[in-house]
Image 1 (cartoon, rainbow, N blue to C red):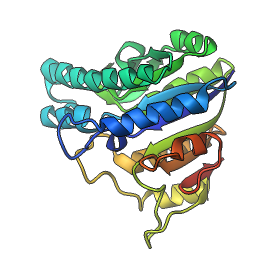
Image 2: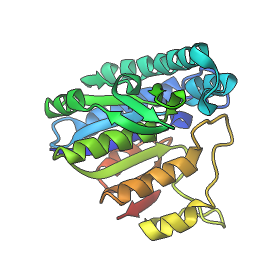
Image 3: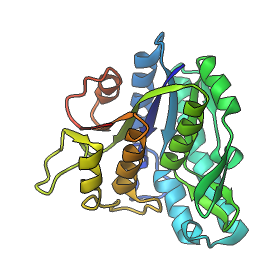
Image 4: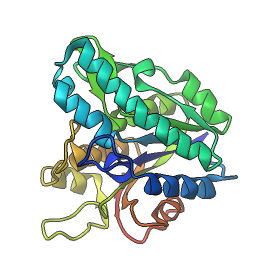
Length: 261
């Protein structure tokens, strides 16, 4: 089974500087592009989306990302993350896609923030049936802290590792945000990086200018490096430009950054 990873950034599908505000026209367009690009294809897709102005804001208010907030904070953050997820599922279904929702809170248990128990049985079967498996950033149970944030990147990497161990072939990961890839010190997009080059640049990459409890672009780059070490290519592109999603799925984007193993 050939599986590709897709991440729709929270800053792409929400107004991240606001509060619980969805970019509905962008989300609808991305869903339509995804439906057109994947219909009848042989690859299976594991899609994740960020939490944007939903989970990040609520988690920051309660201190959930720092292990604080107690049961009330964890529950509140889980609720708003799920609220956005339902909107994403609705847009995907509205475009004609058959989606299978996966909540990290029901499939992942962490220890000190790192995934330790990762269940993929239902994910594997859904992929085999041709469903678009869709996950998101969530709050999960943590053996040491009580609860922890499981970012979309963390969930996608954990699921990909387990699927790979069970025989799935994962060749590409597509990261769509609202910037044209990774920028160098002069502000120009770096078109191609090896793992070593990406690791050397990681310290120069900042987080998000908006509320973000998982690390923004730096976290995305670190995750792309981890994928590259598994032999998976990453493509970091600007999903706010119409047509970018189908182009990158065809491995023919006009911009962005490619990170190769």
